Image (cartoon, rainbow, N blue to C red; front, side, top):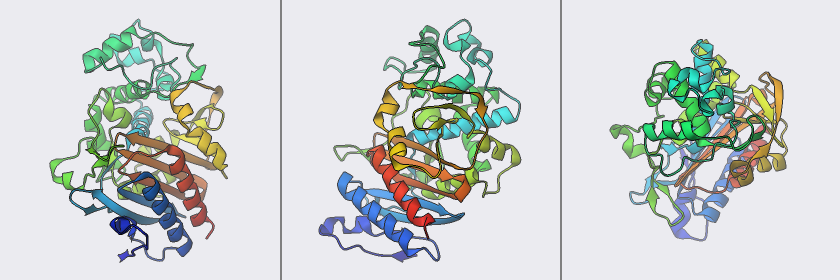
Length: 385
């Protein structure tokens, strides 16, 4: 393990930019680019700690900076657990795809087929595909504050009415993909958190990934920091596990990237589920929508990635063109997902045709565009070697 201190003006920040690199034969160009991006992000956005995991031609490189807990001065490592925010949605997609491979559901099923309590409601008639790709007709980004428990959730869904016709506009929504993940677990006759922790994460060899971080792992669970610099962690909420509740480490997320690239030892049914997530259901202005993942033609144009990961795409309805039939998975794509909670920011990318990818984890929320630019330049540096 190599530790290098960067020379910077603020002595108090010096330790933040002492990267820990755990890979033999790391290309100098790649290493220098990660150092450069980490230093800029941490200084500009006052990020206490960051973990980068990079896969280049199937080989993994890890770079760690700063601290996971400012009070304890605990350094970030590949084992540090970060909140993934909406990157969690890709695991909900994987569960649903797996349930479909196992014959427990079809994406053309309606919600009411799996939740009889929704029978006769607008949402009950929506297909799982529509819920999993944000096309239900205007489900909002978040549940209203009055929705506190499962009973409230069911009542909310029963009362919900479409804002515009389904399959006409994309509106990114936790209640939409959250219900999708919830029904996936129901189809397997399991509780969502339980099936993820006991079946899905182990099947992907992700031994340091959780919905509920156990007591014996709390020391590895980073504190996030909000805009005021206060230590925070994600608050519980309805369908939080499905939409934004997964916590993981850079080591495990690199394993996840490798599994999605087909470079890990994964059972055939689970591997097929991962591939099926890249089915293209519709086109937006800049990307193709898969299950949770967004896909861009590769080689990718940075401006398209920035537009597709912009705030407008998250909070405003977007015009779409349905793919009829859905397009089969392809390898010449930049596949990505951002995720945030009140104190954390994450970004995951993989490029099947290049056997490459990156995960960037931070214990502070910062703009998506900055994550995209950093990942773009780091992968560009790594793939040019």
